[in-house]
Length: 251
Figure 1 (cartoon, rainbow, N blue to C red):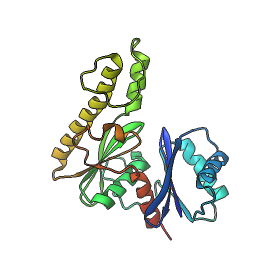
Figure 2 (cartoon, rainbow, N blue to C red):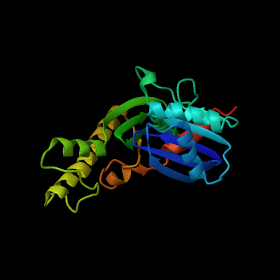
Figure 3 (cartoon, rainbow, N blue to C red):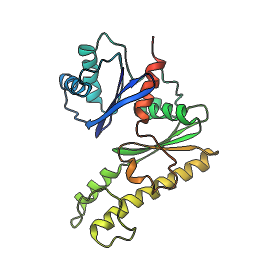
Figure 4 (cartoon, helix red, strand yellow):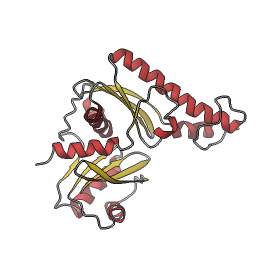
């Protein structure tokens, strides 16, 4: 079994693969203060005795990445492990001004998108930030767009506006809100759908062709069915990409 770990700013996703089949996955809260020993306890608790033959990891949180390296060395040092970063083979050419700035998750997502759908492709990742990544015909990462995530925007609005508050992130019964809660939900859900559709449409016009548009990330279900440009939903896109990276770096 290959254990894949995707550490995001808000959530950490774990998955185990048997060959190319994802057997099971879990989501936990990301804690930047977690130690290597705590991470190992979490992993062992989730696996519940399931044997592991290798690991593949990517992280957007440097503190957690450091502790994951220690965890791998201390608890899984006899297993093949790949931590996505500079020097790791991904097969994704980074066609941007500064390749070192590109997050490991965006590279891994691009690899998985091209593997599943070919190119060109556009990946919309609804996480702490909303990232839109553009993949070329040959699987190269061409760049993209970044915007504040849905939850960040809701939190900021509740903090800065005296008469507004945090609301449940669900689709309201109509676009025209009949009360403050529905008005906020409408602005968040339909507003973000409009933002995504606008960016994807502009990117498509600049890119040319008919790219596959793939939604992923924990908050993707909130916008699916509302944003008209989202054609595919791959909740495990990053885990799939990590599996592919592990295969490319297998000795």
